[in-house]
Length: 134
Image (cartoon, rainbow, N blue to C red; front, side, top):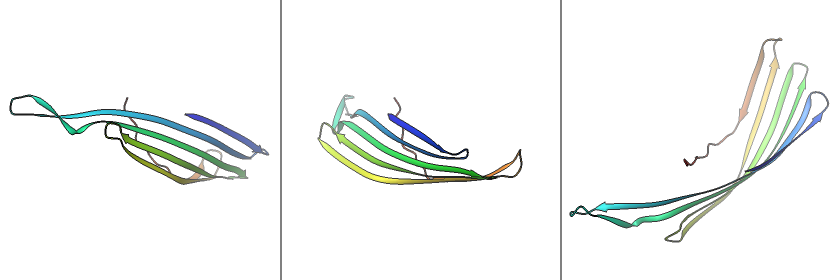
């Protein structure tokens, strides 16, 4: 994973944030299914004997602007992601490729009611990616 972030202030209450992130991972899984015959011997099933390889590259960029005016604060942001995913079954030389681009907006609003209480509202679009157990 590679990541860089930058924050540029505009006066005492406003700021612009931006960043880049690249995530790359490779997962392999060697699998074999066997069947027990009537003699008690185990025989491999050739259709279920392979080595799966999963390659994922995700490139992202984001920008977010925030400001505070009196008791009201806001943040507006947008993240773009390019996903490049390739899977392969190595023994049978089967491959699949997916490449797609997504936009993820976010916003946050807050209003300070008094010194102890603030009313907040936020929205962000997120996705969950599967993790591999190692």
